[in-house]
Length: 105
Image (cartoon, rainbow, N blue to C red; front, side, top):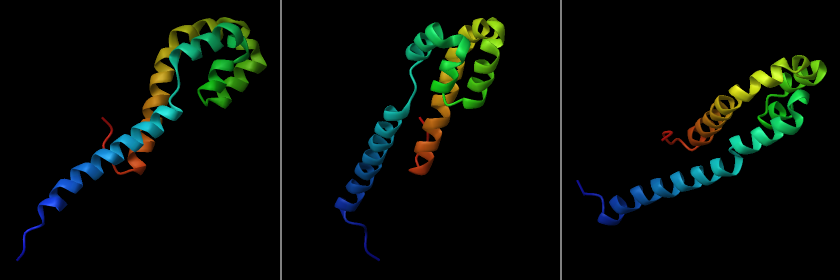
């Protein structure tokens, strides 16, 4: 039985690292910014603009139709935006890394 060549043993980690870098780059291209979400909330909060930005179209439409729950929902959202951005980004990262067959770090 033959042993794998030394080059084969060196190539596997390099391929893994390249896949990791490609997945991270793809994630960086689609991840959402908490800062931008807060800016959108500040200017368009009662219209649900920040919810549309985060891909939460249903909640954005509900906020738009009720003018942010007459302002109360929009005020509550200032405390929820950070967690919503983290949740959206975690889902996006898990999806991208999962498609590549990589663990989410």
